[in-house]
Length: 331
Ligand SMILES: Nc1ncnc2c1ncn2[C@@H]1O[C@H](COP(=O)(O)OP(=O)(O)OP(=O)(O)O)[C@@H](O)[C@H]1O
Image (tube, rainbow, N blue to C red; front, side, top):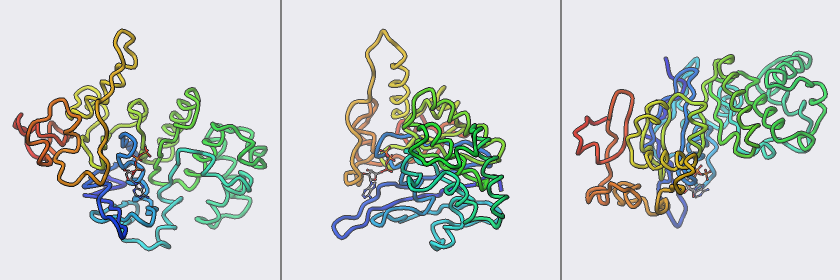
């Protein structure tokens, strides 16, 4: 098997007494072994919920209403079908997650040693001595050389960058097959951001770990990923290699995103931003293409009928009616 994770037709629904609607719909993606895969999208596009669904950590009002999430390690497992107990064995061991804010992922009441070794205690049968050695080695790998000193520290005694290094150490200590990183550098200074991204890249190579990078920042995707899915209003609008996305973006939404980051570096022109607002999930039903109200190329059909995903070239799909006009094949 060449893929670590296969998401097929995933929908996530809000289901309360008062309302029922999809917040994520029909998401397909495959993450290869050792691949660095990015999901990029604006706030509210469904990035975090997709990653929480993989971890089986969706809040109570939300549930996977359709589709499958298959983890292919020694055996294939359909994650949406696993019990809480089975999923606990996978989290931290086969799949780990790094969250945006390092302070919330660490418990302020316990030392770094306690928290780092807790992961090993839960998933392995190593002796205390072996765990300490592994812990110190892992801290060394994330660039913390004074490991013994840091072991005795509490989270508030460390800088933001150090805390995020500790979190990466915790996430990788059991050598997971997949690391989900949800905006791992957003809360950090720009200089530290680059160091942390480099570190994740290096460690994924040495540990044979695939990375799912969740971000609103196309720059982070360009720096770290090989493939990318562009999420908009709960749906994948375009999926391809990072190189193709940057050199030959097909979907008008992606083209708008790229135009807005490129205008940042262009001092002669004013900053470009895509006009209009992202629709809310309650508005998704029967709105045709969800990007149509903001799209510079919108046609009549876009407002009434949802487009399919088209294969625009090898390894490149895009969900836009313009491709029907251009006569490209269905994906
Ligand atoms: N607990 C919840 N109950 C109802 N709706 C929710 C809940 N959590 C998220 N949503 C809705 O689901 C949609 C997707 O949210 P999600 O957090 O995945 O977005 P995101 O792309 O990760 O955004 P951000 O970058 O701001 O975290 C949003 O419209 C959000 O309002």
